[in-house]
Amino acid sequence: MPVSTSSPPLPFEKFLAKTALHAAFRGAENLRSPIEATDANILAGAKLYKSDCSFCHGLPDTEKTVPSVTFFPPAPQLYHHGVDDDPIGETYLKVKNGIRLSAMPGFTGVYTEEQLWQVSLLLSKGTHLPEASKQELLKK
Image (cartoon, rainbow, N blue to C red; front, side, top):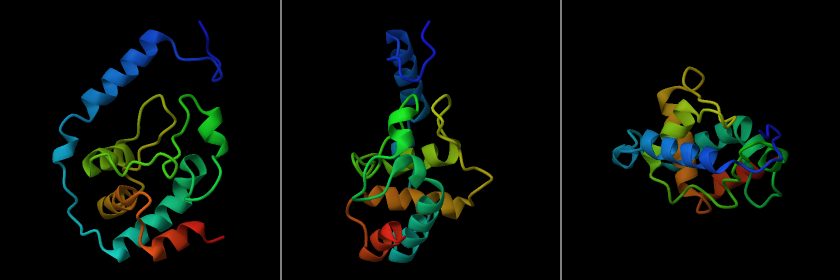
């Protein structure tokens, strides 16, 4: 039984993970953000993302991060393939609850509800970010 992070997933492992994720996010497309997608809210989400998410999930116009190739499963590079086509409710639930056995933590109890939605709004904009938010993400 392979336990190394460099080993490929087993067929049943892939099936279980895919099935569980689909079940966990069923109905998420019906969740709507209670806050507006204003430039201020997206900028606030950018500050949180840069501080707590970018190490694993990367930044716009940058190389892949170490966790994107060393974690199992790999941490998706959100500005390389994005989540802007995911329903915002699904993104919110991933940020809020995390994803078990994936190294993706849940931020319940760390972020307020407003902050959870701000990060989700940022990610829903994908590569179409307001300029101030993109500059915040790229600022050294």
